[in-house]
Image (tube, rainbow, N blue to C red; front, side, top):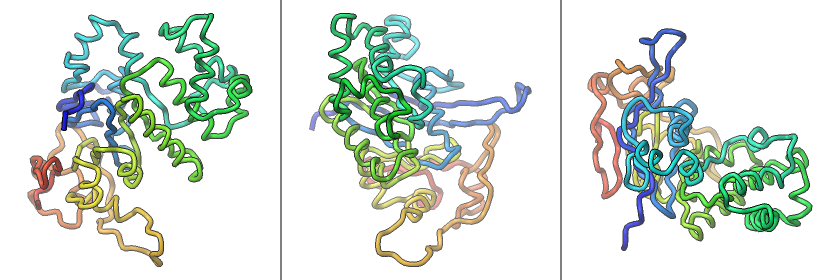
Length: 322
């Protein structure tokens, strides 16, 4: 099978933030993270709040400047690509869908404005054909009747409809990569599947690469070909979604899956985890970040971060007990 084109390649990414005003007191939000985004495929980044999922996306959208590591876009170092093509062109090709469909749209502008503006800024339409382009995009994301929808303001739409507007705005400029930051977490359960199916259609029919950030490891398997599990800024397990979700190897991945509700199962389940605080990781921190909560941790786990082990072809995990 022919390998798909790699659009974004991230190697050994590091992101530090200051704690307070001290330049030396730092929190490491992302530590030694590497992954690829391929054309027409989705990578799910799974983990709880504070795991560094959204920070990685914000580095790729240039909201944050990474502390260390490298970002390559279409085979070129990102700085070189932007120097040759400009910030605007990179922004066009790498779009983001935010978690909050209520806060990501400007309440004083109608839906037509939200979609027409990127079309005009990025020269994907002109004043003569912009209306047709707006209506075409609304039709594509399932918002009909298109003329009436375009005239509405965000508060007149449901959460699911607003997220569809956000998706229409993102794809208006013909991006090659979309970073979807928990795009369904604030929506009713009844509309989540519709949004995932819409993104799946965009991935398969338009060849868009997706980075799908989520708390829900079950939807990761449904939508994404690859899954990476993150904990406290570290990738602890990654590989094909079926393999990671069906045969998890890292204790944290097993914990996430054990927390997924099962239809027909009665009573409470005991989760295999120690009670403990999520650690504040610093550049000087050592060991496995999950050691304080891990039920099988040993002294070695507190002293060094294990190397990546290929447990199956294309399936990797970091654990001293593999």
